[in-house]
Length: 490
Image (cartoon, rainbow, N blue to C red; front, side, top):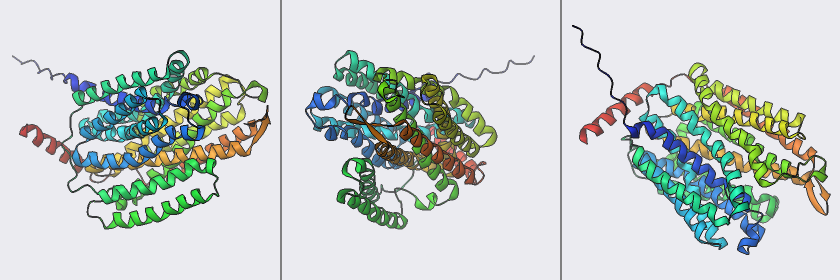
């Protein structure tokens, strides 16, 4: 008599929750970065600081995130991805508690710098997904993880605006503190530590050199509009960035265990993916910047809708929902055609979205439609980028390589912010004695972002064929063997 086929055991609850917990961490990170935006107009009054000083609550997060993302990615590869991920979420939560307890601008800036550590959440989580998930589940999970940045940003703005409008502003940070503490506990409980390790000592000199170079570069980019692009301070920062980063590259090439493997970066499949990430970051960020300003512009401009910050956040919300819905599609396209095609398609869709914005930026429904199309293209592009990196680098370097890729997106966003601001300032007209960007200025910003998106499409198509990379199967076998050994040792 035939024996009934054994029923495979159901996966543990913790294993089933790994992807949702990691995705919630990515969304929370993006929410944390966004919640301060509705506060910026009121922070000078609430803290007694100048508007220029208050702007550092955003700049500090940008700088610390850019510096810490590749550093924490490398630390994750060496000392354990779950351990470093939990530490990053904990720093983010501590920063939120500090914001909730104080109204001193110095404390707020320091707290926001701590929260910048959370920028490493997405690359670390993607690396964990590569180590822990079977290939058939990996693509959709990585696509979802990549989309959490846009989803969290779309949720954070209206949430923060509602809290700021109807409650004390400290309440918002108490809420994010509670969510952060929950995220730390859930990550420690649901996510297994990967047994994969990159041996060697941590490259402290490389980390300090990269930090110094990036701070000079991004500080000059972010403050150029305020200090003047031809000012001594900005030019000195750019010169210092070039000198420091050149010396850093020489040090990295000589180091036995470098922070960033520059020889790996020079491979076309990796280097061109980083270039595409920079260009896509530029194109994507202009959408959020310009849309928020456009719909809040006074009706007296002839094109503005005069919406409140809450209504503005709700206008951006459909884009976040779109990113959530289209992330599975990105995984399917990558599985069938390869992530290179998905990235190129996403960049092309972003350009189409900006074409819609140029065609009509007066009607609210067209503004929302154009912004949602850009968000759709961003989902496709951002979901494909980590998959390209995962296929092109050894398993033991996935967190650091994805950290560099996220860093390139951050640089692209910083340059986008500066470029869009320069365009809008140059194309302004007085309204009630206050300079206000003209509609022509907004359309030029859309055209600039669309052109950069087409350049990202060209960079994506230039990436060599992205079939399974040589060594990927070997890496997978090594990962499985190492994991089995770790389980047997336990």
